[in-house]
Length: 117
Picture 1 (cartoon, one colour):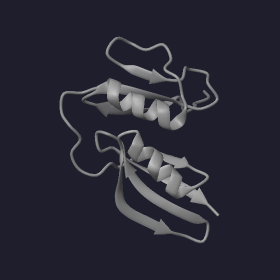
Picture 2 (spheres, one colour):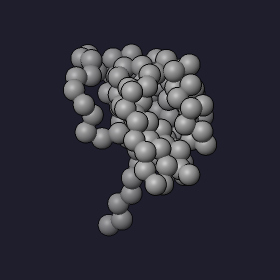
Picture 3 (tube, one colour):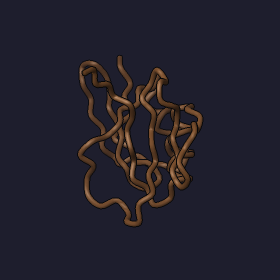
């Protein structure tokens, strides 16, 4: 049996708002979706699809899993996230390989933008 990674599911109170943020940030169009849900991409795409699932409760606590988004310029990447409705958490890590900035989407789901040197 061959297993493969098909996608990542994000719980959201406002599925439309959060999926628009990620669609614009990653330049990924909406694919066929179940009612009330939004899928970015389709099964079989070269990249795993992102699935936005409606839930009644807001996010609480730190995420145990997050996405890493590679950018050409960390400052421009931060500005884009903020312009789309996300925010910079203030957490920044410098490594020999590059810089990592911890961001949050409009509902507070953490993710990192990374600029490799």
